[in-house]
Image 1: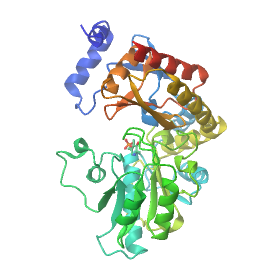
Image 2: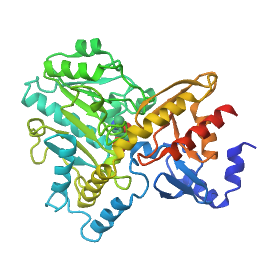
Image 3: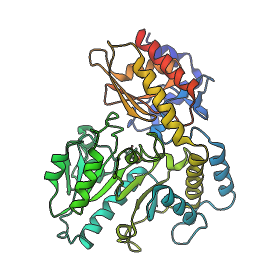
Length: 412
Ligand SMILES: *Cc1c(COP(=O)(O)O)cnc(C)c1O
């Protein structure tokens, strides 16, 4: 019997969960057979009381860790007063939140949404309208340059420019107006720009794509090229943002790489609520008029109170600095693991770390399963790569635990 068969058989309480999910849930995910019922800080517990270190952090939505006390307090406080207003009326939380968000991001204006994909859609609509109004692009001819191996979400427009076959297969017809270049290729970027190009949309590190770090200098040069050609530089920092890579925003690792449009999500919701936003200058954001765009829940008072608490906690508790410090330590220790038969490459910045395994060693999923048994939860991406992205609040003890368990799995 495989370990997981034994594991699930020995967990009668979880058995019903598996049956319900099997019967009633769409099969759009393939989770590890772990049923979580409690979380605190960097740790989670399953229904049998087994404790795990969360080394995935819900794909970086849990940068603050689970149930951060100040974020929970802000949520409970807001829930006791007003939860939803819709944008038909003002609420007393949204303005305060967006002011703080713009200050943190060094941007002039923000448009609040809920999920990451919605914030990306917002940026796409904004760039197109900016192109028609300000750049005088021929009507319906606006083009946005994107990168191979990108991940920007799952809506029909966004999968239209995915290069991942599975994300697209069966979901056409697709939205036109996107041009794909190889990630990190400056010559291709230059060559792709023409008079109808309105924006270049990119991830400073490709997360879902396998923690791919672009060549040194790429972002600085790409920014230069975009500025010179009147093309908006749009950074999708939904995963890399808010401290994940050891800087508040990943673009800050490079000189003069500040984007015109910054897209945030995931950790902006403090691990408790979906909060996302697109940020830009007054000139660019100014293309939106009442009725152009919106969301029933976007900017709601719960989201705003939670988002504000998340930004404050990040600053007050120096999570960005901790991410840089722990990230440097963790990546060094992982690189010291003696497993040349298994490890192809270790890469990343801050606490966004990818370990690529050799093809002959086997898929990353098998390593993730063995780590789960040993009390470390993380996730494979693109077959051979395992992503290590723990909450930004971890200490040396958690780093050592991760390294020790990975080493044990690779040795066994
Ligand atoms: C997760 C992610 C998205 C999509 O966010 P959702 O909240 O799942 O819609 C978009 N871009 C990047 C880089 C992401 O990591």
